[in-house]
Structures are given as structure tokens and as C-alpha cells.
View 1: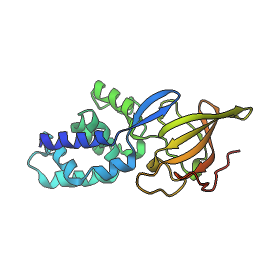
View 2: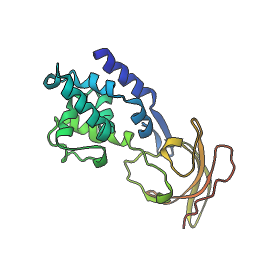
View 3: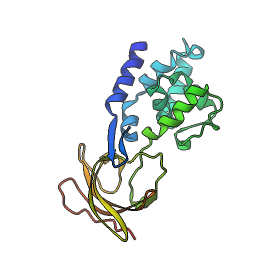
View 4: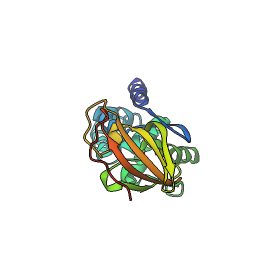
Length: 213
């Protein structure tokens, strides 16, 4: 079982991507790919190592189904640090993916080191998602932008513009095929506010620019 858990952790590491912006490289895990990666059997393998569930296949399977439905990102964050045995403490309190981002005060029931690592790592598993309903976004300083590359494209009284490559599964601005990279122009009026002002597909053809005001 330990081999299965280690194998899952290695597979999780394989989908880690690097955000490259002016603030320096940061790592992120595309949530859609995390959800596709983790299976019911994977979660069962991890849960079966928890003493309370050992030799209890029925409850192990039921908890695994619940985790996949509501808390797979929480599970992945814990797994990445080797703290997956604490997942049931989240489940029984209904601390699910919907409640990310957590503060340390919310996770009072965890050991201090586990709690602090989770609060720190959760940003890697919840990169900013670019969507049509979020053309103007205020960005938390801790948030990670799923930008694979950026180059300066101009500056003026309305702010600074960068040409960037967006990770495809972290945007819903245009449909994408597997492996496709999205080009966009992003305008910033200040360090916390982004405006998407132009959008193109990987071939460079306009895809209906989203104009920022």
C-alpha cells in the first residue's frame, strides 16, 4: 500500500507546472488535471493506511467516494506533503474544496506544522482561473497566475500590458484542445488588478477579444 501512495504522489508531481511572471517562478497544479488524476482506488489505498479504517473496506470505499466528490483538492494538498492521513479530519467537519482558501484559525484541529503547510500549499492547487465572467479581477497577493511566459508589450496612462501564455485548463475564455496554449494580452492598473484586454488562440488568430474597461 505504501508503494501505491508513493506512486500516486509521484504522479501528482508529474502534473506540476511552473508559473513564470515578473515576481519569479512559482509552481502550480492545474485543478482539472488533479481531479482527472486521482481515482477511487488511489484514495482507498491512502485511507486503508489510517488505523480507524484498516480492514474496513466498506467505510473506506464510502469515504473515498465522498472525498472524490467534495474534497479531492484538499486530499491532494495533504498528499503532496505526506499528510494524507489527516483527510478524515476535514471530511467529518465538512471542510471541502469549496472552502479553499483556509486560514490557520479554521484548521485549529490539525497539528501546527500540518496546518501551516496546508495554508501555504493550498495556493499551488488553486491557481487563478481566467473566465469570461472574471475579465476584471482583483488578485490576492498569494495567488498564483497560470502564466507560462510573459513579455512586456507596452505601458501608458491606463496601465502596463504584457503578452502572456496561459495554461489551457486554467481558463474558460476559449475552447481548447489538449496541449493547446492560449495567448492573451493582460493589462494591469496596479499590482492587484488584472484586466484581460485581448485574446488569441495558439495559432495567433483573434478569438473574440475580451475588452477591459
